[in-house]
Image 1: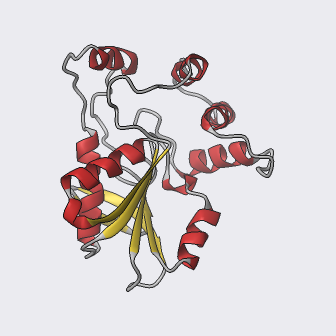
Image 2: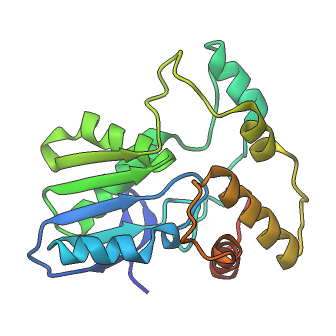
Length: 213
């Protein structure tokens, strides 16, 4: 299992492509495992001559879990952040940004193209801001800078994503809720199989189910 010690944690990663090819590092979003990157996308990047590296963020998938770390109340934390009050968390986006840079260090990679989706887009923005000498290009996908005044999700989408969930769901419940979340944040695609969201949610559950992250 390809796991390396980076930024004092164990990070699970996978890579494809020639060792001497230009590297593109893919960073996934909140609570989402690296398997969410579409295989067609990875194959397309390989066909363009890249060495593709993607990994599980800390607390997600097969990377190290922050067991015992206090989980903040999400709604209360968002309210405090909105009005400028200090918030506490076991780790921050800056820590997660440093995980990605440390992974490059552990693999002996001096510079890389970086791309992130959703929260991963925030992480790669921080990589580019704090380590510009390590970054060749930066792509932030369906993400935000967090600047005040920028539009957020529609009210109905926010409500669905923030809805309470059972504390100890069955596999069937967890897969159904995961599929509903994926459908909520995804674009319409007539070519997408009807079972795509449920299949991905099932893969994620079977690979590593850790909702407290």
